[in-house]
Image (cartoon, rainbow, N blue to C red; front, side, top):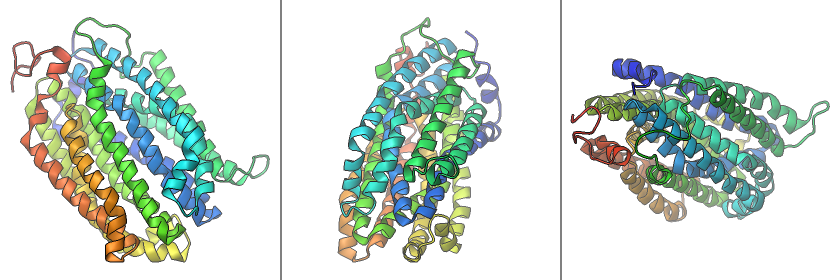
Length: 468
């Protein structure tokens, strides 16, 4: 079988040009995804600090649901990219088919969590009850669409792994436009629309998710060239458990990250709703750097997978180094913005003087994490394209497990309140980044998934591309 039409040009292009072509649409998509999170938070600003705190902290629970999807979503990306790089489009389609079914089933767990656990989750995060009512109203609705959210995430992974980052960007553009239009109408209820408050923001998000999945279903039905989908294919079987072995460590990373931020919010709740709000606001602002690094890293992951599938280990290594340099350069600019204009940034989300008083010094400390976040995220995302996720999971897990008790101990030991939390975030991020860079430098990830996909180690006579 000849190589996939979309992958051959990407493998032939110089690394910077190919990475830029992939990363720019992903950056637009990630910006739109960040806008999904910001739209609701910005529109409820008029409802007060509690509404803002409820929505900005709900994202930590949504991360956990999205991380659960990585059990199969990350496996889909690694399998599809490496199979396409090896010229096995039909088997890539089988991986996509099996992964999408699994994502839909996993999404039902998120729906159940919204129906039966939303209030309990907010009581854990906010034992003082400052934002329980508002948070429950939002989270219980938005989690109803968890199967749709997971399926759309997996569809994005399939198309990106195939080298198409532009189409998912356009789909997400339409969805966020709908969300931005519906949110104020359902929150404040002008004219014939019902006034639903924070729940209205959630219903606008659900409507946008319906649109996204519908668009991907149409693309699959019309056999889009970058959406391989097949129930059967010649060659060794593509096993869903194999994809889960790749994705489960990545899922653990995201789920523990979410748990850690739940702990941060609970610790901050001792200082009231403004402190809870600034933990969420700070995370939303830090997400600007995060989405840039993720965009570069996801583009790099597709290239790493296709390069390793084609036996081009040298190219995969160059891709990772390029992604690191680009992410670091952007982070230094954003760090200066955080240091120079923290009050203006916090003011996007809240006009409460109490939030400003906490937020200005909080953001100045948080600015120090941005270069480390850039290197950490771009490296981890790129290397995950190789399918080697276990060591990364160990690093993230160990740091997360240490962060949870320290979220309560550091503010108590230092009598620094929420500033103790942000210093913990900063220092632990630095440590985690150094560990990830040290492991990535060893290069064991360059073996790819040759054994899992073809039943023999890389470099053996049957491996496409031969030894490098």
